[in-house]
Image (cartoon, rainbow, N blue to C red; front, top):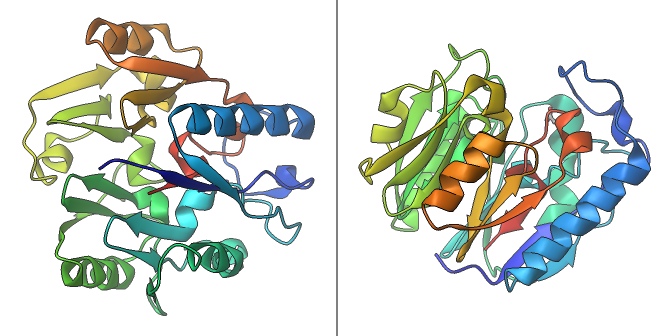
Length: 261
Ligand code: GLY
């Protein structure tokens, strides 16, 4: 898919009050804003028009805007985030999406979905059932996607303790090429339906960097992960590395910071 737009939301002043199990100390808001600004510049350098949703003190996790919606070339679906403190994040994201999509679908109770659990693989979607995305939410989402002429598979990832979300541990780079953190089951990738032309292994020490995104001809990757950087460079990918330290402290990865469509 060729991307032309992204939606982002800068971290709010109380970002440190968001959910985190990382135990890496509180984020520095000024550094987080600087890292977010550079992330937005990288999106623009990939040719995307970037739309900002305003930060909101009611939603300290709101900068992880990917969790609030699933955006595709054929339609958009607002999620119902699985953490109660995040449920209201969808309102302002929905307003922003309505500029670009005429018909935005919704996940409704008792369903819950976090966008971080959804991995698009060409015309197929992998949907992870996690601590945040439940089975009813996954089924609703699969149905919305089928109506848009996509296919979907639902995977239960709850036994994988290291995965907050499905995309915590995997990324699809297109053309059957996957990044997968150590311990990711082959069946997760096979369920993608695209086959596995290549699995680029991400070592346990670099597992945070498995959450990267391909945008058109560029891969955005967290900075500071030399083995994975070298593996992608060897394969000829155009790479942009970005400092993510403050978002990592709040359990957020690189994909979480934008909706790309
Ligand atoms: N802090 C990101 C999340 O837990 O949803």
